[in-house]
Amino acid sequence: MNQNNIENIKSQMRRGVLEYCILSILEKKHAYASELIGKLKEARIIVVEGTLYPLLTRQKNQGLLTYRWEESTQGPPRKYYSLTDKGQAVLLEMDKAWKELVETLEILRK
Amino acid sequence: MNQNNIENIKSQMRRGVLEYCILSILEKKHAYASELIGKLKEARIIVVEGTLYPLLTRQKNQGLLTYRWEESTQGPPRKYYSLTDKGQAVLLEMDKAWKELVETLEILRK
DNA sequence: AATTGATACCTTGTACCACAAGGTACTGAA
DNA sequence: TTCAGTACCTTGTGGTACAAGGTATCAATT
Image 1: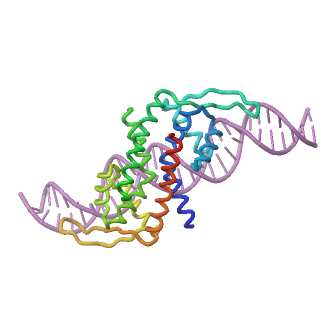
Image 2: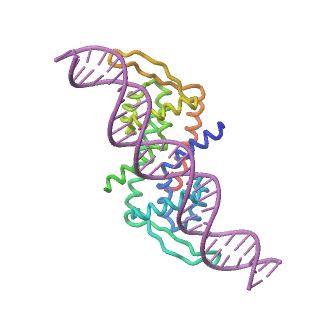
C-alpha cells in the first residue's frame, strides 16, 4: 500500500519526462520500440508497450521522429526510429524546460 | 504552433512534479489554495484552480494533508492546508524519486 | 509440415487527471 | 443594494498511461 504509493509517485514523475527520454535516446542511436523499452528500463524508467507505441506514433505525427523498416534475422522486421530536424530542435527546448524545472525544485527544496 | 508545442512540453514536465511542489511549499508554511497558486506561479509552475482543488482533496484523502478553517477580513474563510506525518514521509520519498530522476537524465543527456 | 518459443508490431477498453468554464458565498466599499 | 474582490468548489472534455489481448514473422524443434 505504502510501497504502491511510492511507485505511483515515481511513475508520475517519469511520465513528465518520458518523451524527453525517448528523444534523448534516439538522438544518440536509432532504435526500434522493443529496444527503447529495454534502454528505458536500464535507465530505471519503466514503460510498457501499450504506452510506447502510441507515443512514438504521436511523436512521428508531430514531425519529431521518422522511421525506416529494417529486416531482422531473429523475427519480424523492425521499425527503426530516428530524430528529425524538428525533433532535434524540440529536444533542445526540452533541455531548457528541464533545466528550468530542476532549478525551480532546487529553490523549492532549499 | 511551435510555441504551443513548447508550452505543452513544459506543462507535461510540470505535471509530474506538481504534487511534489505542493508538499514542498506546505512543508515550510501552511497555505490556502489561492495562496498556493500564487506561490507556484512565482516558481514558474502554472496551475489553475480546477487542477489544484481536486488535487488537494486527493492528497487530503490519502492522508498526506490536513486543513483548518481560518477567518479572513478580506473575504470568505480560508482553508489552510498543512502536512501530516504521512505527508512528511511521502515528501522524503519524493525527494529520493526526484534525485533518482535527475541522475537518470544526467546520464541520458551526457 | 506442423508446432512451439521468441521477437516484434499494434489496438482496445479503462481509469485517471489537467484544464476550461461555470457556479456559490462571504466581505467591504460605493 | 449593488458591485468588485476574494475564496471556495464542481462539471464536462480531452489526453494519455496501462493492462490485456491480438497479429505476424522467423528459427528450431517435433
